[in-house]
Length: 174
Image 1 (cartoon, helix red, strand yellow):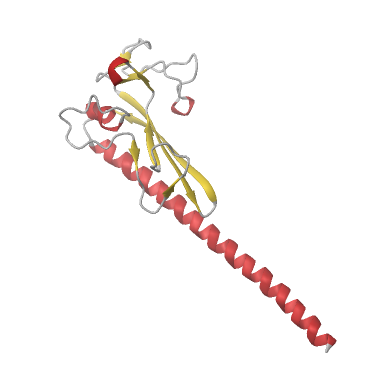
Image 2: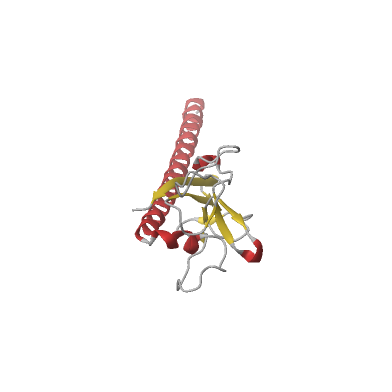
C-alpha cells in the first residue's frame, strides 16, 4: 500500500511538472506568434510607405490631419494590428504608431526637423542629420528632403505580458 502511494505521489509530481512545461510551451508559442504578427505588420507598413510618393509619406503618416488636404483617406500615425491587443494604458487604444523626427508648429502643423532628437534614428542631441543633403542642418523641412528616418513602434499586451517591437527605417528618395 505504501509503495502504491509513493508511486502515485511520484506520478502526480511528474504530471504536474509536465503540465507546467506544456503550459509554458503554449505561452512561448503564442508569444512567438505575436512577435511574428508584429514583425509582419511593421514590414507591411514599411513596404506600403515605400510604394507611396516620397513627398507624401510624411503628410500621410504624421500625427496631424491639418496637412492632409487632397490626399484622400489618410492612415495617420497610429494603426491597428489584427491579432494583437493594445495595451490598456495606450492613449489612442491602437497597437502601432509611426514616429518621425519632427516638431509641432503653430496651427497644429507638424514638420520634419533636422534638429529633432531621435537617437534610434541616428539623430542624437547635438548631432543633427541633414535630411535634404543641402549642407545645412538647421532646416525645418516640408517636401525637399531626400532622407526620411522613420520608426515603427508596436506595443501590445499578449500571452507574455506587455510586449513591444520597433522597426527603424531610413527611406531614401529614388
